[in-house]
Image 1 (cartoon, rainbow, N blue to C red):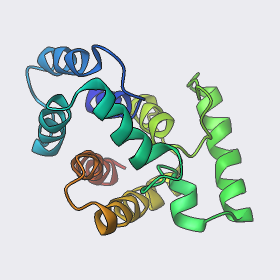
Image 2 (spheres, one colour):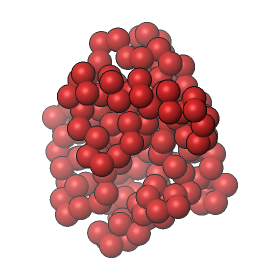
Image 3 (tube, rainbow, N blue to C red):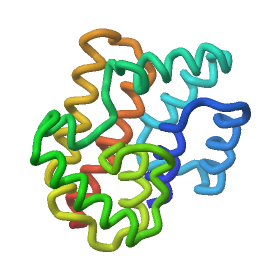
Image 4 (cartoon, rainbow, N blue to C red):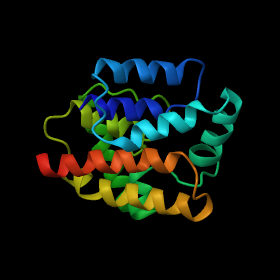
Length: 167
């Protein structure tokens, strides 16, 4: 499950030393990432300057994002169902002491953190996670087929499939 925490960290706004820190954490896992996509994502992001990484992150995941990293939004848009889903997630995140750090509860980063520590994740989350990540991936691929975050979404999707098997 440490891989989920690495992927959550990769969804943070770029900062100096971030990629080196991720590589260090990968080395603590004996280089075992669970899938090749995450390693490929790191390699592509490592090629960019910090300002290029910041611009890519903002364009992809932040301001009017190409791929909104909100699981509930991907499934239900701005609806009452999303609100119910976020309320349930918020309860679970608080119970597991996950800091939202200013994000909504259905943001992919706190969800990955939650999945890394929860022994019994919300069944509804497990039901929609893979489909919502696929939706993020497809939205991004339509506008930027070479965007490195496609690899990160592929890595997260591969991990979410293993959660389905474990559940």
